[in-house]
Image (cartoon, rainbow, N blue to C red; front, side, top):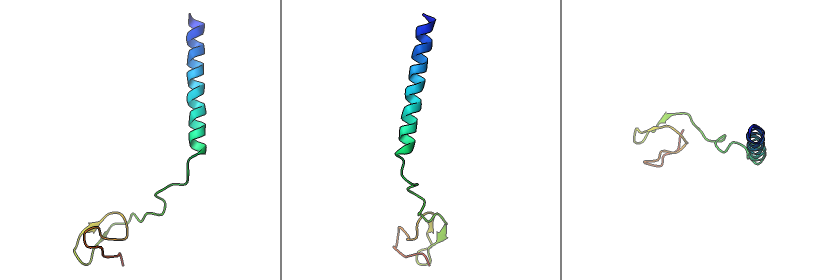
Length: 63
């Protein structure tokens, strides 16, 4: 009974490891690497923009 449990554990661990390797290989570059994450205050409406270069309320571009 014990050998079956060990074999099952090794098979499951191996399958998880292989799937993790495949997933890591197929991963593209970081999607958010080009996103501007610096906070700034919109000069038009005063909203504190946390991400991006355009105010979501009034559409003003970051200067």
